[in-house]
Structures are given as C-alpha cells and as structure tokens.
Image (tube, rainbow, N blue to C red; front, side):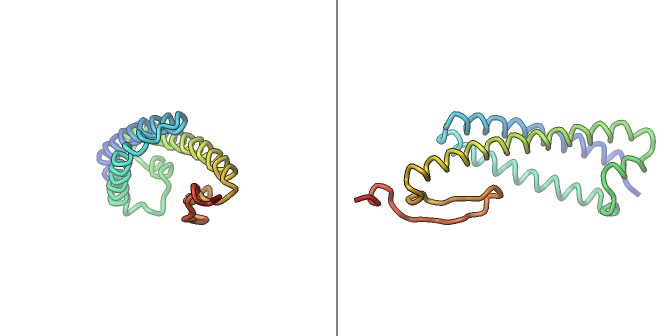
Length: 152
C-alpha cells in the first residue's frame, strides 16, 4: 500500500528542487540573453549538480510509486484518502507549473542560441564553426576548420 505521508513529503521536496532548478534556469537564461559566456561556463558545475540531484529524486519517485507505475499521478490522487487529496493535488499543480516554466525558459534560450549560431554560420559562410546541433541537441556536423586560416 502506498504511504501517502511519504508521498506528500516527497512531492514537497521534489517541488523545492524544481523551484531551485527554475531559479537556476532563469539565471542561465539571463546569462544567455546577455552573452555572458564566462558566467555560463562557471555555472556548468552547478548545473551538473542539479542534474545529478534530479536523478536522485527520480529514483526516489520510482521507488515510492513502484507499485503504481501503471497509474498517472492524477489517478493516484483520485484514489488517495480524502485527507491527502488537497496536498497531493496542490503539489502536483505546482510541479506542472514549475516544469512548464522551466521548459518555456529553455525553449526561449534555445531559440536565442539557434539564432546566434545561424548568424555566426552565415558570417563564416557555413564553415569554420566547431559544431552545429539540431533542436533536440543532436550533433549535425563537426568541423575543425580554423576560421582564421580558412580564407588565407
């Protein structure tokens, strides 16, 4: 049987983590928008730590809900005792909002970066750029042409 006290505690911890992640992604977006490459580079270790922490939370979530893996969270909430429904529902609503906002920020950052890359590729005639990625982050090509020597 599902331990609803544990689930409520977990959703609160999970949301706290996602609030921290949203704060980080918001700051990272500001750095992207202002072309602060040095600060972006310095933020990589914090980003890696947050990603690792996300993995720990995912494992914990799978463990708590292992017997309910075929149910959606709204279905779990629906089947929960009345005393937990409000807490679980508000936690789930907040989580959806946080995840949506993080996705929105990342999509906007990806758009800025994509436009800047296309400008750089246009300036260099499509060559000389180290690597290009598609919208999912998959590498499309990698070139090792030194742009300083390319036209010489």
